Image 1: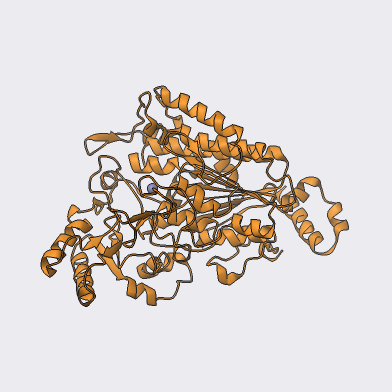
Image 2: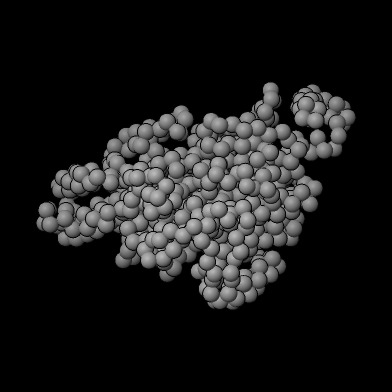
Length: 550
Ligand SMILES: [Zn+2]
């Protein structure tokens, strides 16, 4: 059967090139298999590492199973060092790394801004009256690159760009500057940007009502049988993770780590496919879906317990529902699934499982503490160092006199490097001199990884890499595990392409998430000047044909 399909596919390609007549002799199902997609669906599963995909792929029996019959890159890369949600989502549909998207972190320090914490949130409009890092006005204004949606709309205003996600930054970074619909969870309901126009789709009201009812009741989730063997308690910071726990009535925080969260986002995505009749014109429509719950589950419980097992089977189910909804439209579509970054387990369980150097960060590495030492040494007013986190971008206070800055910076670097948990420290000047990395991302040096998420306008004065297996959470009462490092467990993500009816294949060699945009653009005949992006088109044809040369 496979051979027959392959032969027909070859006929189809030939027919596209030379003769409509030959195409007319092929069956409708095969014509559909190579038809230009009119609905482009991009699913991002927050914190879905290549390691989790490898560990769970044999357990999937719904959507994530079907996507494995498409083109599977089990070894994709968010190639940059700043492996966080906002930078990661900014690469998926722009074809550019954070160095060019300008989204260098979830939050960065801007010492020129008129607010006490001097921090800026990646998906806010810091110029909007009243916007702050904790109560921000959602905007794509800080994204310096254009998304697939932006490019599609510029070439054909009929195209529609829809983005829905658990997190606002996921929705905004995948959607871009010209979204027709954008919806995300506010903490109490699904909302849109204040600048959005037009009536609220019915599915939003229905979903918000269902979520309100869900939160009002206590929940005691049941563990799928496939996850039973993973259920074992691990003690951390006075509580237990590794076994499913019940949620109290009225706990909106528990909603984010429940299966209901991604299910609600999926309901909205499917509802919008129907309500907006996506794909009903010749201009392709884009639907970005950000499934954010996997990240909250990873942070709250780690990646290797019963909680993550139940969560990923939930993702499998939601992806299956999205595919069913797309099938029901009878419109040609393409689905891409990837992640914004990877992740690793909590150090306590990693320790139990043979990772002997797994540890939590030494609280002495807090930038405020190192800054106090520098202030005493140089007779400066605190704070000397500013940062959103105890690793990655670190800024030198701008009121340090110019004559002293290079000495203070060098002293700060020395202090970091003398700590046994620090792997490397780069200065902004060093990274600015480096060319953008090229070649296979698994072989990049640490400096190259940092270069790929370095923007001279926004990045820190020092960039600090902790050693492998160091979790940068000293106090594990709220979050036990995280990501954000330049190490491959945080960089590697699956990249799956699926077009119904087309023949799939699996490739073990690395590609990058920035390759997704040019690959999709080639499928719909959208031309993108190579100089504008960092990615390359990936040929999705398993044989002699080439989807990049349509
Ligand atoms: Zn996260």
